[in-house]
Length: 252
Image 1 (tube, rainbow, N blue to C red):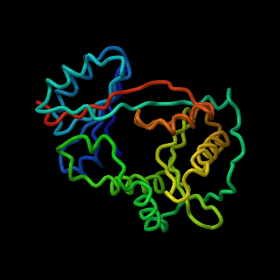
Image 2: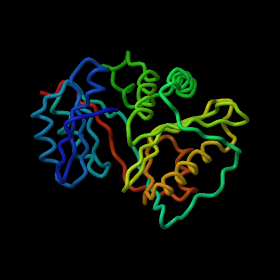
Image 3: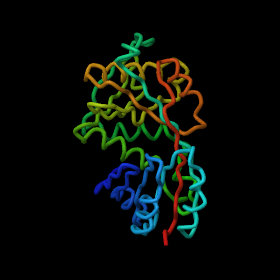
């Protein structure tokens, strides 16, 4: 969830993930194949010899699963990530919120409250970490709590807490960029679900990005999360790309 020492090539991006390395007590590197030629990325993976390499490849290049698996002790096909984009200039302003939500920017003093909110929203949630037997002891909620806090303290990131009738009901963690701003993480407390609040959070976020003059809104999720994808499409988002997430344990 955090990173340093980016290596950017026209075909791939790689970096040492400091926070994940601390979290799992091993050397974790991440790789994203963005071009058509995987050769340099494969060379970099072998050069880094990570304890855990988290690799994302376009789903159209599934033939890479076999050579990737041959580079390590064990490999795990951990998830399929789908990425949606909204052309804010073309689609225009989002529609008004359905609910009379009040949203405020979270501060460092909100950390204990945000921790409780995140724990309630993401109890029982699973992601690509949970698919890897070597990470079976990882507490995903703690990881998400750490991620949310970073969106309070990092310059180009923000976290908003939503209230309905003065009661906290949701949060949204976002990243603002001059080219493409991102909804990163968010959710609704269970008792407030099925009220259209998720759609409201998306509309609020898009409106904020447009106020910041960001031309694109980008968000992503695991393929199986169909309900949120239906909301995105109805709010002017289009599927733009998809990736397989592969964990390579003990690259050799």
